[in-house]
Length: 359
Image 1: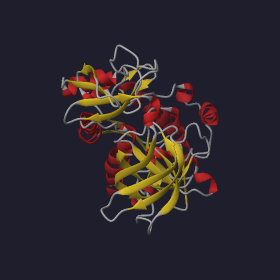
Image 2 (image 1 turned 180 degrees about the horizontal axis):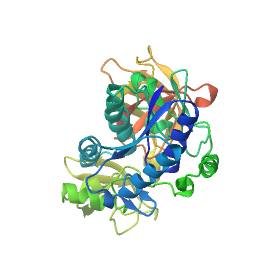
Image 3 (image 1 turned 30 degrees about the vertical axis):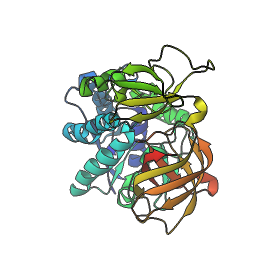
Image 4 (image 1 turned 135 degrees about the vertical axis):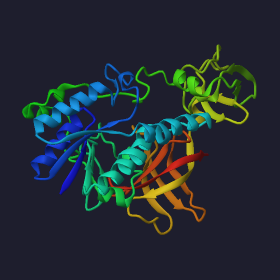
């Protein structure tokens, strides 16, 4: 097959491309230029997609003996990922930009272009597996990225390759060493790629500006303080709330809810974070069709952790209603809820939807 290998400049995508070559495919490497100011996209191990990363990807492609190109997708990335991220926070939500990048860039814009150029599939260094068309968790549970891939459609999965999903990270690095890839020990990137200094609040403030509001005790209704904008908060947050005194019982307060219209941030005790029901919108099903009626599932509500079982009900209005078997804490609107088959270890992805509200 003709394979387009998305090469980020890291060890995972380099080894994934190497495995595609070793499997006998006709492989072409491509690095995605996602910003017009790429020099600002890396700070140590933070960030990605910088000029440094492009150079690392080019060297890896040279070692593998494959053609290599850079595709400028900065406009698409700005609109579909960065602007969506800002708008979601302004609406009181907590988005996952990696998930949105997979959905809108790597397996929409890139895949569409790849298919138009005659490629059969896009290969990436994600830690996930594909078996008989179904997306599954990676062998390395600590690196599993099936959650941020659960948004992919049946068509996108049919044209995707995840060659390293059956391998643990230390073994991927060892394989890179054997191949002579200079990125073998390159640190993993952390946090949000377009905010390499890690200061999400400052980034959002520069885009949204100040929109003051009140911080209110959810139980008593007492106004505890003021803030510069709801974009500085996320459900479940404990630090940096801006309240200068503890609760009456001496315990810390957590963000329980965000009301973007009134600008109110409601805070309260940790126990009040428990969520038993979820309503989610815009479901995507890996099989291409919604399940017929209610079904049991293992669900995951954030990239790392937040896993339990549930009854899932696809509603006639297109939403999905989820009744959790055990309450989860810190479930934030804007995040995804991913659905897994509860049998066989709960590692087969059924689909996902965006959390709209909780109860």
